Image 1 (cartoon, chains in turn cyan, green, brown, orange):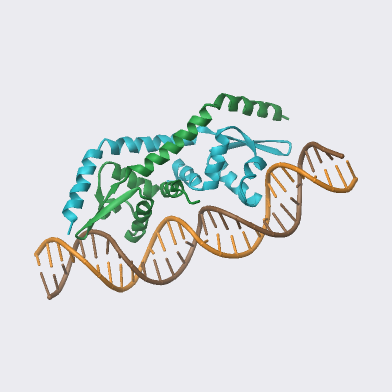
Image 2: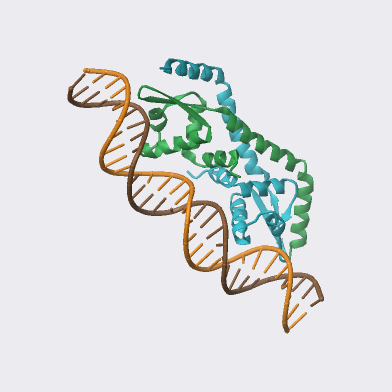
Length: 110
Length: 110
DNA sequence: GCAATACTTAGCTATATGACTAACCAACTT
DNA sequence: AAGTTGGTTAGTCATATAGCTAAGTATTGC
C-alpha cells in the first residue's frame, strides 16, 4: 500500500528538496545551477534530485555533459487535491467539531 | 531551518497517519477507535499519533482514561497554500517550460 | 477492592535517510 | 592530447524512523 502520496509527501519533507522545487517553478535549470546555493557535497545533492525524479516531481534530460531539470506538475496537483478534499470534509463539520471540542474542554476543567 | 512544512510533509508521508487524518476529518475519535482498523501494536500506533500532535495537525484532550483526538486545520491549510503558490508560479510559465523541454528533447535526438 | 479497560513508558531491533570522501567517466576547451 | 568542467558511482557512517514486547499507571465497572 505504498501510495503515490507517500513518496510525494516524503519528498517534500526536506527543505533542500522544497528549495529545488521553488527554484524550478520559475524555470528549468542544470544540476550545477540547482546545486550552487546549497552548501553540501554534490553527490549528496544529487541524491535529493534523484528522490525528486523517482517521485516524478522532476524530470531531466541530458545534453552533452549538462543535465537540465524541469518540474512535472501532476504529483503536486494530486497532493493539493488530497489536501483540498480533506479540508472540504472537515470544514463541512467544523462547527460541530468546535462545539464538541469546547464541550470536552469545558467538561474536562477540574 | 526546520520549517513548519518539513514536519508537516514528514507527518503526511506515512499512510497510517494519513488514514488517521482521513478518519478525523469526519469527526473526533478516541485513541482506541482510531487504532482499531490498524493491525499494529498500540504503542506503535500511539507514536504515529504523537507525530501528528507534535506537528500540530491533531489535538487531543484526556477525560478519565479516554483520550479524544480531533483535527487542527491550520497546518493543512498552510501546506495547501504552499502547493497552490508553487503551482501558480509554474503554471504561469508552463508554455515556456513545455516549449523549452520539447526543444531540448528534439535537439537531443541522436 | 479487584478486575478489566484505556492508555503510557521503557527499551530493543531493523531498515531508511542524509551526509561525507574518493575515485571515475564523458564532454568540452585549448 | 591534456586539462577542466559537469556529473556519476561506490562505499562509509550517523542518526532517524517504524515496528515490536513487556510491564506500568490510572479509571471505571462490578
